[in-house]
Amino acid sequence: MTRMFTSDIRDSSSTRRPDPFPVHILDRCDRPTTLILDDQVTQKDERDGGFYKAGKGHYGDHLKKEYKRFVAKHPLSGALCTMAGALGHMVDEPGESEAGGNTPWGVSSWAPMPKMSGQPAPGTDDPAANASHIKETAYFLRSDIVGICKLPRYAVFSHSKHTGERIELNHKYAIAIVIDQDWRTASAFNGNDWISNSMSFISYSTSGFIACILADYIRRLGYPARAHHAMNYQVAVPPILLWAGIGDMSRMGDTII
Image: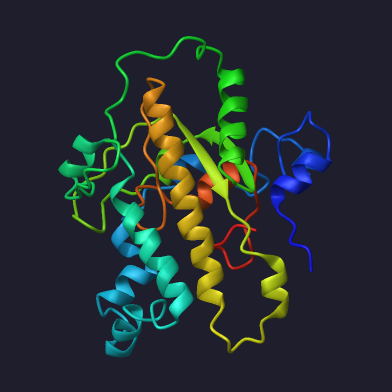
């Protein structure tokens, strides 16, 4: 069976649209169709997340034990999780990472990750052109869907689950990256073959890889940027996906579809 990649879909369609999927047919609106009472939504503490609380024993010893191994117990998802974890140190400038308790791996053969350029690069003063360029760059890095929106304050966690410290993040915009978990795999599995975690972590590791590169690239252009991915978040993703026009709130109330 011939494998189809998103770049094949893009290349076979109109060159006027960089998106691999036909997002151009979606209705455009100024606000999410999900009702958001902006003045009533508060910031959330990252330590209130279900996975964190399970790992700390809030739901009993059994879930505390399983939290530490439910991904790693399968070889493929375990390997993907290791790679995603390695990207946890690469989200920000070296100085910022060290201040947060994470130091980039000191491998001498790697080109050092620089601090943000002192001034914006020439030709980057057009917001519309910048948005198009960043989307194209994300697609070049193999994103499947990309959206950009203003970063709502309530999407930023109040405190870090890693350090317990107050999170100070004042970026104006957010770039949302979506990775396809492979629908054909989802259609083929039987529910007891343990592939679900691998599907999740192919998206976690790939989106982390893309986000870290994209943030580093933006900093090199002279603008502040920080990557956020499964192993090192400072933001809650669902509000960003809503405002970026990528999905709607599900009936579960905590997932964007």
